[in-house]
Each structure stands twice: as structure tokens, then as C-alpha cells.
Length: 287
Image 1: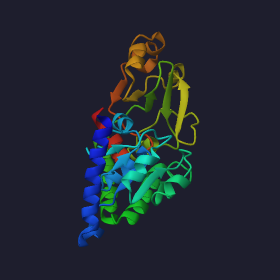
Image 2 (image 1 turned 45 degrees about the vertical axis):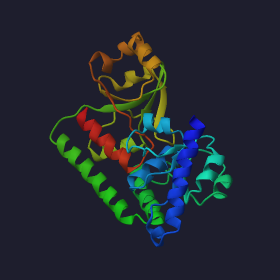
Image 3 (image 1 turned 135 degrees about the vertical axis):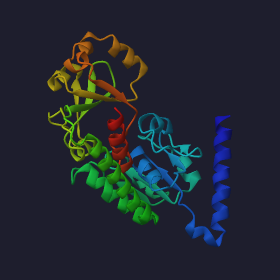
């Protein structure tokens, strides 16, 4: 039944594509884009284009969430091993990926032009790089106006949240993701979250060295270092991890937990672009 559904989806996409190719307005139609991972997928959707396929759509909906995938978007399989057969069937106009996944580009370039988003390559701050890469992708897609609007709206959102915090003495805060009941990923220098915190004039309680992608992977006991600072935990937290955390004396005895300073907020892709930056600022204000 799943195979039949996929064939029906492909048939519908093919009919749409053929109709557009035979129409004089073909040049104005939205390009058919397949995304090998979530960072470029978020960017493509933010520019007003629904990708025809994205690797690991369930993971995107769990870990990125917003902007939402279109209903017609097909699943390319694992981000580590996207489905080349499906890509061939889809005949995309462009394939997008992001720096750091270690995929061999050659097979994808044989199917369609490949655009790689070099986020977190250390050449510049993630927020500024998100702006620049948005403009580069938009130029390739004929979406310069949409890119400029996205840049302006993101800056306006962050400025609005900053105004909400203005004049208030805020405790330092730390931002984490939980993957098991003994370790957390803490975001700091070099992360998109740090760039947004700086723009909000908020202090990151986590000052330890980070990896090139802007986070530290540490044992839960090391969160003692942030004292009673606010702790922002990103969803999703796997259900079995949540159960163990709730039963953990190690967690319960952290100063920030004992002080009641832990907040859980909806998913935000830590390695995303401008949409993730705006979403982070907005959810911080709500928290």
C-alpha cells in the first residue's frame, strides 16, 4: 500500500511537471527541489518553495517542526544515505544539502545541480552566515525579494523580543538538548542560539569551550556549573529519557532544577537558518 501511495504521488508530481513544461509559463513555475537534510530544507521553505522531497521527513517534523513541510513532500530516506532511485524518479531541478554531512556529492550532481549550504564552517558567525546563504540560495532560485523580506522580518522579530526584555534584569540562561538520562548537548559560543542571545542582550550561562558546531556534549552533573541560572530544554525529549530524567536524583539535585528554573520549549533546529533564529527568540519570550 505504501508503494502504491508513492507511485500515485510521483505520478501526480510528474503530471504537474509535464503540464508546466509544455506551458509558456513554465519558466515562472516554482522549481522542483529535493533536500538532502533539514538545514537547507528549512531555508527553501522559508523562501516560499515547498520541496518535493526531503530526507527523513519524520525527523524534520520532530526536530525542526517549523516551517512545516508541505503535505505533498516525499521522504528521501536517511540523511546519511538518501534514496538515489527516488531522486532519479523525481527529476528535481535542484538538489540542496548542507556542509558537514560527509555525503559524496558526485551521485547527486549526476541527477541535478547541487547547492550546498556551508553553515557552521567557522568562516563567520552563524546568524550572519544564515543571512548570506539565504541570499545566495535566493539568487539561484529567483527569490531575492523573498530573501530580503525574510531577513528584515527575522531582524524585526528579534528586535521586538529584545524590546520586551529591555529594562528587566534577566538571569543568565543555558540552552540544552537531551538525548539520554546522563548527557546533554549545551549550546554556546559559535552556535546560532548564542548569536540570538547576544542580539537579545541575554547572557549565556554556559561559557565552557564548544565544538565547531557551537555546542558541548557533557554529563548532566556538569550543569552544576550554571548554578541557579535558567535552563531552557528543547523538545523533543524521547519518552524513555523523560521518564528516567524525572526519576533521576542527579537531575533533581541540580541547583537550577531545585530552584524551579527549568523550562521546556517546542523544537527548534539548532543548526538552522533565519527561521530557526526567529523561532528561538519568539519561544524564549514565551518561556
